[in-house]
Structures are given as structure tokens and as C-alpha cells.
Image (cartoon, rainbow, N blue to C red; front, side, top):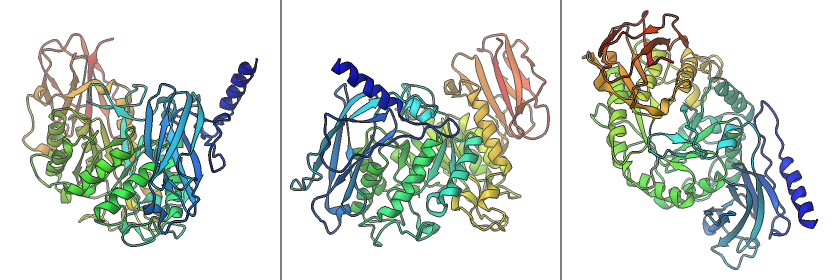
Length: 557
């Protein structure tokens, strides 16, 4: 009877995880009183939701950020351990965090570099974890991982993850909480799935909207907890709205480049702070290959085995291969082959070459790693480049050349573009500017990213493989060259045509009968003129109108 009552009590505690607003989860994160937890009275959490435990240091330190190392091990019901670090969060407060992958009793235990600190060393407790039952796709499916064939990303439960990112580099520093929520609501409506941000770039400002600097000294030797509390609140809000957040520039949290020990220390602390969140980490941010990138990458991997790591390199202009990405590729800590096909000073031919050829180059690299284009030419509403068609077209080329993800950007100040301050990526706050952040949210290209997402979500995109050899009439001008991908079985093929020129392809090893449809990537709809594909290997397809088009070929149902 006692056991039955205990189980009933635990069921009621699990049921008490509350949900509110738009069907998304508001996680309950119990924070017990500081000190040793009572294993006989476990707290509760839901699977994949952020849990934390507050600990109180019983000894003072001149710089608790650097003077103390707090490790934590969480061990699940199957005996599998999760290891990371704790972090200093102001005064005598330290925190440990986790997101538990499976239900059951999880035991945590700490180890402090100062064994005499009874408030931090050998603390332990039990968390009773229940299955999450809300609507948030992140909490339902779990942290991202690499697929079994190493070609794309999936959630922990194996569901393919469609990466459509947005660059909001400076938003956590420059946006208020209310502005951030408005931004997330818009990007959710437009079906973005990833938000890319930077920690505290100096070019965005010295303090956040509350006037808090990220560090208490220029050398980044002690962080300011109040700044990072505000920062993490935005990350948590994004997760609650269903977004994965990619954090770039861990090796340069403020400016380029701190001493290695300071960069690695920050990396471990920010990983510990975000250990219970859906995040992807990148040491670099627009940098060439640097040994510091590898040092910080290894520090991140030391702090987490459950989060994905990539590198967001700079763009080696007009090179046959993405040399910076190549130099990082074989590092064991690297999960995702990230590249930046880039802006290239407005050279549209270089942008097209990089999206087509660099992506394919990384796709063909062995051993395989998922490829994501983390930054391409932004839409800045220009006249000769930096247009909606450039951001849109590079996305389609990227996806059909072997990538499993693409990240969009709005705004910049290149030549021949009305001068602004950066739109979304720099969070322009002057309503009179053409690239004021609220205006930039509604640029046509943002809606066209939604159309890209929805088209891919309507097919089994993860089975597509780049197939440039199918094209029999490739344009000499690479800006006019189509991109084609197909499934190995031949039951699905997708082509992006940047111009209304006809496309000749060889479908000789495709099954019959086939049907074709034209998709308008500008307006987000299929042309009503669908039809069967005539028998025979060589086929010519002519778009139904001006501009760029997407061709869908699939077996007849």
C-alpha cells in the first residue's frame, strides 16, 4: 500500500508539469533549497526539459568564476552517466543543470576542485523524471543528433530535423525581452527552426538593454552573471517556442581573440549554463581556420557529449573548395560540417559557385558529416545582388547540392545598397531606417524562406542526394546553372532553375510512370499545370513563366 501511494503521488507530481500559451510547454524547473538534497524526497522534471539545482558555496573566493571547478555527474536508471560542469551565478550561488533523456530516477552528484567546500563538494540528490506530454516538438523528440547514415540531423527519437535558420547575431544583447518575444513569434509563424546568435560581440555594443556588460574586465577573466542570466532567458524562451539555438563565437565572446585559457573557460561555463537547453555550439564566428578554434572545440566537447558542435568559419573568397571548413572537418569533436558560402563582396558568381560546389565538396567528403550552410548572401533589398532572389536562390542551391540545412540573413551595408545599420543581424532599433528590425521581419525573402521550408517538409527531403550529372545542358554562367537532387530509388527528384531556361535531364534509370509539378518559390504555390512525364530517358522541362522555379518529379501515386 505504501509503494502504491508513493507511485500515485509521483504520478500527480508528473501531471503537475504545467503548459500554457499556443500549445507550447512552459517547463517546470524545480529549484530545491541549496545544500544537500534528500534522496528520499526526489524532485521532479519532464524528459528533455531543463532542470537545475542551486548550490551555495560555503567559502568565499576572489574570483569564483575562475578559482573553482565544479563537476557534476547525472546517472540515469540504465546506469548511463551524463557529465558536465556547474557554473558560478553570482555571490555564493552555483548552479548545475541537465535535460534528462529518459524517465525514471536520476541521481546527481558533484565534485568540487576545493574539496573543503562542503556546499559544493559531494553534494547529491535524486530527480524523478516523467515523460513529457505537451506539444513542444523539442521536448517531445529530444536533443539533436547525427542520423545513422551521417547525412542529416534528427531529433533523439529519430525524426528528421529540417534546419532553416535565421541570423539574429546581436539580438540577445540589443533586444528587450518583449522585442525578443515578438521576433520569436514572427519567426515561428514563418516556420524557421533555428535561431543563430552570438554571445556578446563588441561591435553590437558594450552592454545589454539593462546596461549590463558581459564581463567585469577586458580580458574576460570573470563574467557578469546578470548579463548571462538575461542572455540565457532569451535562449530558454526560444526553446519554449520550439526553436533550436545555435551559439557562435565561443572562442571570441566579446572581441577577437582572447587568450586561450580565457576562451576555453568561457566555453565550459556557457555550456554548463545551457546544458539543459536545445543548443548547437560553434567556437568560430566568421574567422579563418585557427588552432584556437580547435582548442575551444575540444573544451566544449569536454563539457558536453549530448550537444552538437560545428564551426561557423569565414569565407575564403573565390576558392575551389571551402578551405577553412576542410581544415576543421576531421576533428573528432566536430559533428556538423558547417560552411559559410558568404557574401563575397557582392560577387554573385562566387556566391553561386560556393553554394553549388562547396556544398557538394563537403557532402562528398569521407567520413560523412551533415553539411549546413550557416550563412550565405543576405537580402539587403539591393539592386545588384543582396536581393530576395539571392538569399532565396542560394538556399535552394544549397539544399539540392547536399546540405541538410540553410541559414538566412536579412540586412547589410554593401555597396549600392541604401545605407542602414544591419537590420536583423545587428538589431537596428531606429524606426526611420529602412532596415529597422520590425520592418526587416516582413521582407519578402523571409516569407520565401517559409515557402522553402514548407516545400521540403512536404517531401522526404532527407532521402535526396545531389545529382548534378543528371543535367545535360548545364549553363556556362554559373549564376544560371540549375541544381538537381534525387533519391537513390528514383521515386523523387527536385530541381531549382534560377532562370526560365529549359532544363534537360536524363531520367533513364527512374521508374515509370512519373509526374511533374512546378513550384513557384516567390509566391509559395504550385502551378496548376501538373502532368505526366513522357516515357524515355532524356527529358526537357520548360518553366511555366519568368523568374526562378522549382521542378518536382515523383512517381505517380
